[in-house]
Amino acid sequence: MRGRATSANVKHAYDVLVTACDQIDGTRMKHGAESLRELLARDVYAFVNHVSTDGADKRYGLFDLLCQGGAYPISRLGRSCRPHDVPEALVIVCDFDRKVMGDHEIKVADLYISFFYELGRYYLSSGPDKRQVDSTRYRQYLQSLRAFVTEYEPEVSDVQPTVADSAPSRARKDGGVAAEPEGHDADASSTDIDEAEPQKTLEELLEELNGLIGLSGVKHEVNSLINLMRINQIRASQGLRVPNVSKHLVFLGNPGTGKTTVARLLSKIYQRLGVLETGQLVEVDRAGLVAGYVGQTALKTKEKIDEAMGGILFVDEAYTLAKGESDFGQEAIDTILKAMEDHRENLVVIVAGYPEPMDTFLSSNPGLRSRFNKSITFEDYSEDELYAILEVFCKPYGLALDEQAATCTHAYLHWLVDHKPTDFANGRAVRNLFEEALTNQANRLAGQDEVTIEDLSKVRCDDLPAYVTSHQEGVS
Image 1 (cartoon, rainbow, N blue to C red):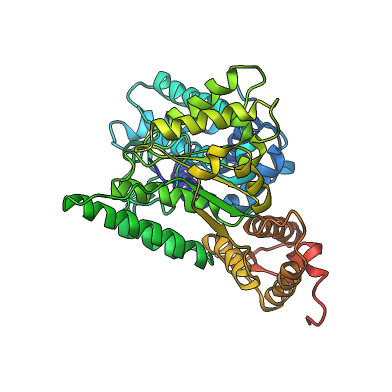
Image 2: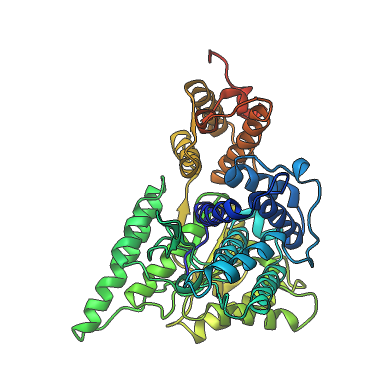
C-alpha cells in the first residue's frame, strides 16, 4: 500500500509543478496576462469546492497559506472555473507538452495530475478533512483530468496515480524535470486510495514507531507484542508448539493520542513479520458499518471486513455500536465477532475509544471481552509533548515560534494540561492552534508592503489565537 499523503507531499508536488509552470511562463507571458501560478490557484479553488461537502473556503485558505505563501487568497481570485469546466492551467500545460516536450518521458501534464492526486489523498487521509471530502467526486475529478489529457494529445500522458508513474518529480538544473527517488513518502500509513510503493523494512517501521512523540507506555506494550510474535515464529520454525495468542486489541484513550497512527504502523509491522498477508488498515466508525434497515448492516459490515482481510480492521469509537438490543449496531458487532472466529489467521480487529465507554462496550456482549483480552492505554500528552507536536507541524514549512510566542504557548499548554476540557483533543488541539496561527500570521503580513522570508518563517505572539494569548501573564 502507498504511504499516507502528508502536507509535505502536497507542498513538494506543488513546488515541482510551479517550477515547471514558471519555465512555461517564461515563453508565453505577455503584459497583463495571468501567470500560470494564478491560473493554477483558480484550478485548486475549483477543485476544493468540487470535492468538499463543507469547509471548502477554509480548506483552500489553508492551502494558500502553506503552499502559495498567501499570494492567492479567495478575494484575489475573484472568480473560479466551475467544476465541469476544463481547468485553465491544464489547457496551457497540455499545449506546452504537445509543442515543446514532444516525446520527452516526463510531461508537465503528469506533474499537474500528480499534484491534484496528492492534494486529494491528503484530504482523504487527514482527520477532519476526510469527513468533509467526497472520495467519489475526487476520483471522478482525476478521471476527468486524465481523459482531457488523453483526448488533447494521446501521446501526452497515460498517467496513473502510482509511485512509478505519477510520483511528484523534482526540477533539474538543466531546466527539465527528473523523477523523484523512491521512498520519498515519509509517512507509513494507508488510505482507501493507496497504490503500491516500495515497502519499508521492519527495522524502519520499528524505528518510526519508537520515534513517535510521547506514548512510552504504548511503545512498551506494542514492542512486547511484536517480540511475542517474533518468538512464536522462531518456535514454529523449530517444530515447537506455538501458544494460541489473540492478536485483536483494544486501544483506550482520548482523541488525538495517536491511536490510528499506531494502528497503521502495527498493520505494516505485522505484514513484515508474516503475521498478516497484506497489512492494510481499514478504518471505520459506526457510520461505516451500520445501515438503516434490517439485514443491511450485516452486508455493509461484511464489505468492510472483506476490505480488511489480510490486514487490520480499525473500529474507532466502537462503543457507539452498543446502544441497545433494538439498535442495528448489535448486528455489526455480531458480524465482526463471526469474522474474527472464521478468519483468525488473516484478520486482526482493533477497537478504540474512550476508556469508560469502551469498558461498557466490552461488557455488552459475552463474546467481546473474551476475544479482546489485550488493552493498550494511550495517555494524554504532557505540556512538553504537545509543544513538540506543534514543532513537528511547523518544521516542514520552515516556521518557528519566536521567544515570546514560545513562552506564551508553553504557558497556555501548561494551563490546558491542568484544566483539560471533557472534549480535550490532544494532538488535534495543537493542529487547530497551528492552523489558526498561520491564518493570523497571513492576515498580519498581508498589510505589509514587503514580506521577507524571515517574516514568513516567524510566528509571533500576536499571531497566536486569543485563547492562547489570554494565558500570557508574566510574558513580556
